[in-house]
Image (cartoon, rainbow, N blue to C red; front, side, top):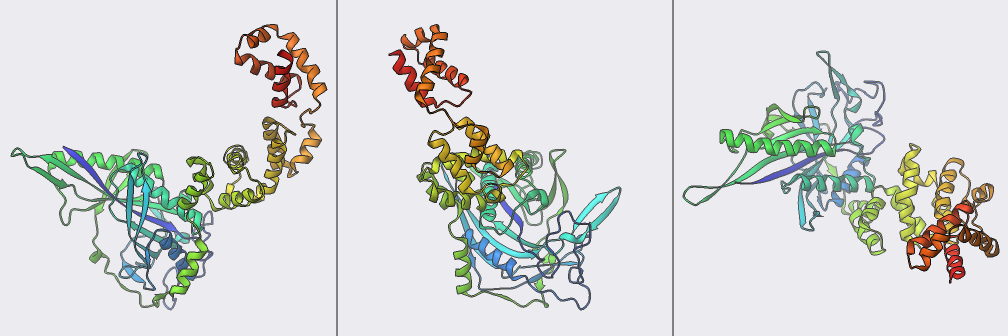
Length: 487
C-alpha cells in the first residue's frame, strides 16, 4: 500500500492599514480594551454604510503580483451569510464570484533539490471576524478585530507532504513581510492557516490491478503557527490512513468535514460537516460598488514592490553569502535596506552580512529590540566604522564585540569607545618583541614542540602573548614575531 497526501492551504493574512476594511475604526486593535474599536458600520446598524479601504486593496494587489497572479481590473464584493457569535452582521463581506487576484503560482525548491510549483487559485479581499473567548461555560465576544482587512490566499492542492506545505507557507510569510503588506505576526493573529488534506491510497488488488482511492477531504481550521500546522497535518494524514483501513470509506460528495486542532492533546477533532458554497447563500453586496483598478495603477504597485526575496537571495549568493545568510537578509525589509546601504560604503559584503546575522542580531535580541528598527538601533555607517577599525588592525575581533555592545548601549562611535576604554591593539613592534621573548623563555616545551613541527605549539604561544598583552596585541604581528625569533 502506497499513500500520497494531497494538501492545499488557505492562508488568512491581516493586511497592514491604519483603519479597518469598511470603516474608519483603527485597525491597530491588539492589546486594546475589548469592544473599543467599533462603530455602527462594524455592527451593520441601520443606515450605516461601508466604504472600501483603498490601501487594503492596493496591498492585496501587491500580494497578487508577488504570487504571479492575474490581477482583475474589475472585481466586486459579496455577502457570505452564516450565523456565528463572532459575526455581528450575520454575514461577512468577502469576494466570491470575481476576486481581486486569480490564477497565480510560486516556484519552490525542496531540500532534496527537486522543484515544486504550487498554484494559487485565488486571493480575495474580505474582512476579519470578531474574537470569541470561551470560558466558564460562556462565550464572550471582542469586536475589536471585526472588520480588519483580511486577505485569503487559496492554493491548489499541489503539496504532497508536510515539508511541502511548510515550504509554501514560509515562502508566503517571508514574501508578504518583505513587500510590507503585513507583519504576519502569528502571535497577534495576523496570519493563520486552514489546511485541506486527504490521502490518496494506492493498493494492489488480487487480480493484479492497482486501485487508487482517496479518503474524504478534511479542513483543519485556524492553525496559528507553522508548528501547529505541521503537527496537525502529520496527525491527520496518519488518522485518515488508519480510518480508511478500518472503514473503507472513500471520498464522495457530501462527506467533507471540518476539524479543529488541539495543541495540548496533539490531535484533531470533529467540528461539523463541511459547508458547500450554496450553504452560504452568496450574493453581491448592494452597499459596495465594484472595485476597479487600471493597468497603469497596477503597474505602479508592481514598481513599488521591486525585487522579490527569492530574486535577491540568488544575487546575494553570487556575492559569496551562504544560503542561510542570504535568506536572513531578506527576512525583513529593514535588513535588506540596511545591507544595501552598507555594501555601498563598505566593499566587504560577506563580512558585513556575517556581522549583521551574527554578533549584531544576537546583541539586538539580547536587549529585547526588534531588527525591523535596526537602522535606528545602530546606523549602518556606525557598524561599518567598527568593521573598518577591525580590518585595519586597530582592535581585534574579540574587542570588536565588546565595542559593539557599548555602541548599542551608549550610542557612541566605535572610535570614541576604543579611545575611552584603551582597547586599541599595541602596534609598537619593539614593545611586542620584549613580551614575545618573555613568553618564549617561559614556555620551553612549547618551543621544542614548535621546532618539532607541531603547529598547535605556535597557536599556544600566540595565545600566551595575547594573554600577557590583555588582548591588545595583533595576532598576525605576534605570529610573525614568534616565527622570526624561533627560526
